[in-house]
Amino acid sequence: MNRRVVHTRGGPPADVLSVVEEPDPAAPVSGRVLVRVTAFPLHPGDLQAVEAYPGTAARPVPAGVEATGVVEAIGPHTRVAAEVEVGGRVTVFPHPGAWSRWILADARAVVAVPDKLSDEVAAQLLVNPLTAVMLRREAEEHQGFGYGGLLLQTAAGSSVGRLVTGVCAAHDLPLVNVVRSDRGAVELRKRFPDVPVVVTSRPGWQDEVRGAADGRPPVVAFDPIGGKLAESLLDLLAPGGKLVSYGQMAEEPVSVHASTLLHKSLTLRGKSIGRWQSEVSAERRASDVAAAKLIALALGDQFDVAATYGLDELTDAVEHAGRPGKVGTVLVRPW
Image (cartoon, one colour):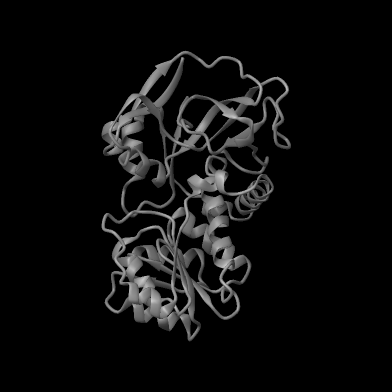
């Protein structure tokens, strides 16, 4: 029997998610690939989507968008990406309902996993690295980035934040990291000793950012949190700067007076990995996936796993995934 994680309403994920049993999937039709899942990640965005689900669904809503596994069958006359073959390891994204033992995936979402990557890294191969690629593209669109202007990023100790830092370090791009605790700062300095880290729990942290910038204007900021912290970033940005919001961890809205935007000519930009497939061309998607693989191969030690659970331990896994101060991604192995 197949086992799948679903929900029928929004709310705290630990309360509303459940595991249901259903018949094993049929053989794939044209354009589809049958994948036996070996692991899937519990991304913060997945949990936020469950919590924010409106109303009550008439049918169970499948959860998750990314998983890694082994190809069991390919539909007839199906075009697949290079090195995707029966018996081969793959990662699938985006696939609504990836938190399952078996998935019948759109062939366009199936990507071959390099042999050098472990299942633990493969389970995180696409969402986080593609987010880092997406964010870097947003930064590079600013004419001052890399030419004296630097980047600020909050939640720098997160899975995405560490990848962004690794990419910037590899390409010698100026960056100041922002975290919320001394513990997080210590951990991040161990990983990237040459990148400045500022702790927001300290009074005067904005002045510390300015000092760490060493006279270079902050022109782009990445923020997955929102709320008051995002407002502080707007104060730090140089005239003509851009704030890229890619998450919604804070409950309060971002409040900004129009005069702030007008007088400093600031840009507010929202980016979601959930819109990646629909917003970019097939050629750009292929290029982004290739970049994601390179990131995983070069920065494999940054793909931390906080813990691994079985499908019968789903409630514990969800609770751990939402735990403050967690380092790394929580994985579930469905077999």
